[in-house]
Length: 606
Image (tube, rainbow, N blue to C red):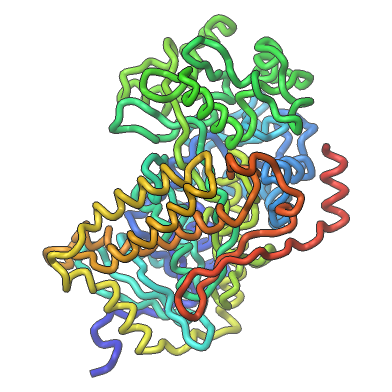
């Protein structure tokens, strides 16, 4: 019998894993280049996590404040990322984002408008000027709708509800993708020599997260197992404002757009505690009182931003400080209040409903809170990972030839901390670049021959839980892993806690090797969870190991035992790779010297 007879086999020039903003934009570009393109998505088409992005797309279009330009955006992104960013990627992003937004508009996206008909842009944390092109607070949904509508006419073949279990390689080159359909459990092979990872983040490794169930670190783990390098995995962003009550919705995102439209943070004493701690780096840009901050929200070009629009890592730590000090809300958060603007703005209730329709309905329906009349209870939630697959800054190709990555799964653009809104423009800019370069690669590099031994080994590993119907419960292992990461590798970190986390992860890996599932392969959620566990364990170990190696506080990483930045640590990125013996290896990779033209922009914009 032929080794491939028991698999459903298809052949494509480019295979894209993930159907969010980055995956769809890559597919559109790959198809436009003439490549036969397949998109594999873990859920249904249209269910991508991109739809949860609410605030807007960061692009220096200068529609609201004409002082904005790509150089300011470049400098803001580098500063926000603690200068660990891949500066080449930051330049591409800042230069190309406006064109990608206008392209999206040409494809049918309906943005909010200024009075003179331009795309409206709003304030967001870490951005010097109003920069986020938006559609109310439903920008991600509009992006996915537009990309799907445009992409579906490009001849892209879509495979929905599929789980990828490995990237097949031969001779150090990409040979294909192995996966199964979640409905029937049938194993499939996609033969290809060019793959784009666009699988998103790792939020389900933590107990409290804004991420949906698909975010189990699949792309990072697939790349690692295939031999590609990961980078900067220690930098996990905790969005400062997730819902905290009721428990059924704990962690669901509350968009930064609430603060961009005038929302303020208060503790249980009613005090705006963000005025208490303004970093030296931003002191010259932040308002000293409430009136100054309100003028900024209203569009006064000469006013300074309110402290609620500082970077997410800083705000999350300030909220955490208030909660620890006993100044939090009844359910373990703080108060986010936009209802106060009725004192300043006639018709404030209608204004809030127009600008933040999703937030209004979300709190009304899920928490019984009318945000036009009362404050929301919010707290930090695991939101985004800045680290991921290490890629070339121009092509988005990883260290494995033929394997590309774009969006949250890729490292480099955001450095130590991502600015709000940069995620959606990241998807567009680097989705386009990855799709273009993957298509070009496919024209000059044929797929390697699939190794039957690797194929059988990977398939057997995926199906192994069925051989142990009385084995460990996969849900219990995932629950324990989430507790370990939340409690020991969370917002505030320390060496002993992270060493304990690594010990617990090793123990959980042993338990996962004995995991068992009952029933058959047709839509078996326990089996899907068992498969996801392997990915979650890889990314959890990578995060803890990298966080332990970086002995400083920078961006999204805050260490109690090393509370300041280190000049020594500013010179390297942490790089993770799989050793020949299967162990996870970490090294400090020296950062390239800053190009003179980039250094000049940073200095000019200080």
